[in-house]
Amino acid sequence: MSLPPSEDPAAPATAAATTPVVPSVQTASETEAAAPPSVSTEATNINDTSNGPDTPSFSWLDPHHQFVVVLVGPDKVPFGLQKDFLCAKSSHYRSKFAHRDELELIDELPDCAVEVFAFTQNFMYTGSVIPDEDTMPSYEILVGVWKLGHELDIDGLCDQTLEAMVEVRRATGRIPAAPLLVQVWKDTPEGCSIRKLLLGWAAEYMHTSISKAEFAKSLPQDVLSELVVAMVPSDTSPLVQLGGPAGSLNPVHAPRKQVHYLDQEEEEEEPEQPYPVKKPRRSESLPQSSATKAAVRKAKSAVPTTKPVPRRRSNAAVNGDHDYTVEQKLYFCQDLLARMLSGPGFWTRLVGPFKEPVDPVVDNVPDYFEKVTKPMDLSTMKAKMDRAQYTSDEEFLADMNQIFSNCKTYWKTSDPIFAACEKLEKTFLEKYSQMNKWLAKMDGNEEH
Image (cartoon, rainbow, N blue to C red; front, side):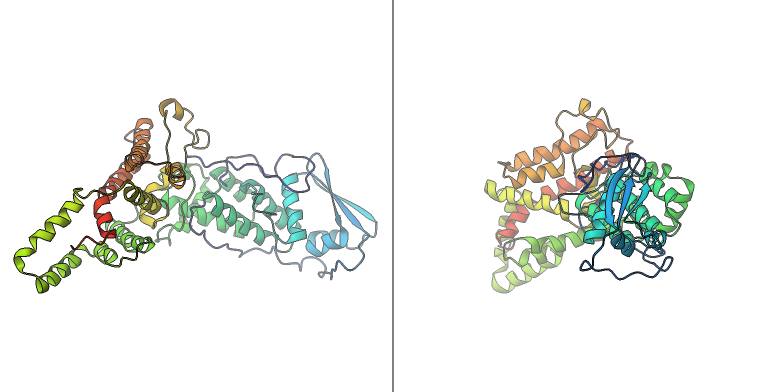
């Protein structure tokens, strides 16, 4: 699936919007999620100011009467900055204006987008690319900021731009789409930090996405070659959930490893429960040994003929003969949904394509709502759960089944996402069928 385009941010100190420095493409603003990879800033000379004159000392306590007016974009939107300040930040301007004494100097950046220079200006004055949490630039703009920082040799800007890109991914769970990735390869030097960052994200996407073939076909040979090299040493599970259709089971992992993830999930889920019950965690992870220990304990304290009686009571609770309240059942549903959305790699890969609402434009399915009249996704279900809109576990189950039904209605059995849906459905129903057993353990009745 295509990755979603980012919205244009409200850039500070801009007078008009102009054509961005890179072509308009579908971009993704990937990030579930979980923590993104660290920013690599190697193999560039973005912080090396030795190319120009020595960095001058700068203080706002000194008078700065000279100004540089930078005319940005084809409309020549003027940005005015103190010459001393600009030269202290940029070795490019330090070299260009080293021997200029005019009170007002003019420079033009006709190929730079106004938004790009606005975020660049914000960094020079504040040290941060993103001014506040309500202003989230698109990947397209951030790529432009990185390129401008590299071109003008603005101290620290490229590093901060990569950190901003990581923040965008963390906030959105998405990564840039293939067209922007290709554009970066055209406009940036080999081995630079932004290439390394995006290459790592693309490699992770290839390891997790059910649309990896389509993604690979959209890349030119030179980018694909570097991507293959980047993927070779990667043998670990994904760190975060990526944008688009990422979320299918990773075919690289053998079934044994998937079982390991499932076991790990069972180990890690139980401590999240508010009930101070320790026994369920042990019996959940080691059901056979716990049952054996229970039998041994009962054999020591009771006549052997009495053992089948508590076993029948336990089985009755597991099979649904025990009546639980609606609140208890909804608590189980809430816990299961939380595990699906924030659990370890096993769940992450299963739920990926069904985590967010379908966008016909972004996901390249223009006729989706012609075939699917009642859309549903896991994020919508979580929002309903958080607002206490479910009045019974049957309503929760109906919404979950709606997700499966929608997928099977729109997609063909030969489509990878159809297979991903069946895997998620099978796993979900297995977990959902354990409701009474889970609730019995929460009540401490599993051994009575």
